[in-house]
Image (cartoon, rainbow, N blue to C red):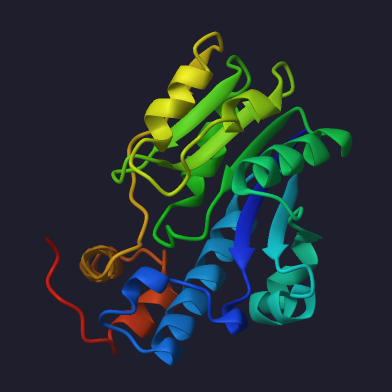
Length: 230
């Protein structure tokens, strides 16, 4: 279990999901879309080469719901509750937990990029063989993936970050100034109606060329009325 990938998810039933889509989608539509995101991201997690595959869920009562959504893939995944803390402390806590399980290299992922190929997770783990830190920059100024090796102190890159702003990547790079760094290609998170519209077009294109990435998300997106990408 020297490699670990952790997917952070929320309970769709809580209703506190994809809140920036409220201008165009009903509560039920947002829940259905995020549920599809979760299932597709879990599929990429399972398809990755990480020895320890983890879903970190919130709130801490959501395990039965998340297991049911993941379905038959659940047997390949360890389910753990997210610590009750701010985002930075939750991320640092899960990295430290993974190291306690024997991991030497750990990747953290969010559930806002259902089109992300599992190959990006695998490449991140490969880069951590020689580097302290790997980051997958997101087009919104944050990151869609961050990975750390056991050689460094995990908490430093999660301290003092203005989460949910366009400064996350900039501040993380500053916090990691003394660390050896590798970068993955940029990707994108889906937060706004325009993001969701682009995801639909991207997934349609992937479907045309035979990819199975994001199949559940595409099925839902085809039923939604969204503005054009911008």
